Image (cartoon, rainbow, N blue to C red; front, side):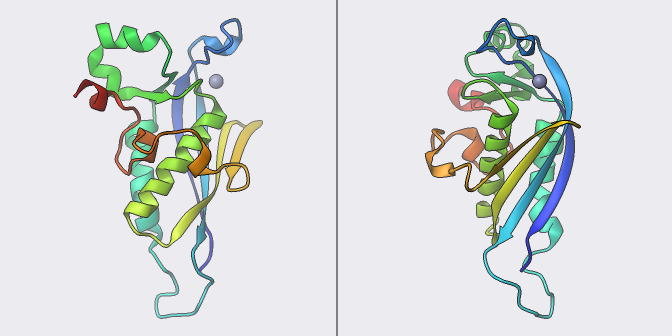
Length: 178
Ligand SMILES: [Zn+2]
């Protein structure tokens, strides 16, 4: 098998509150690209189909999640008081908030992408694993995470966190409120 690579574009907004004086503390947005590289579990062997899984089977759930849930979401630190604003005034928009442990930096986004895609691949029993996530925040800034730089088992996110679940979630509000 060969490695697979695909790219998706989305728009997002976020703000970083850990440094309240920084210009990133004001809500703002980026048009970003996420490129994922998947490594096969076995080496390539010629066969009738010459593939182990159709490209669409591998991309399907991932791109549906990016298009329908990540695109135009507002990314916030779980400690951001804006969450309280939405809870009180616009609770119907809570589903559009993508919530992070700590600031929603591009690094943190790459990490939750890594976890979510890994959960999708495992749930669909696809013979690939995530090798690298690259998030292009602007044409001149990008973040890469790979298995040398990121260990899903030791990243400090709980086993039942939304990023580890193979569903379409981008936060855990429905669990907390249920
Ligand atoms: Zn930004």
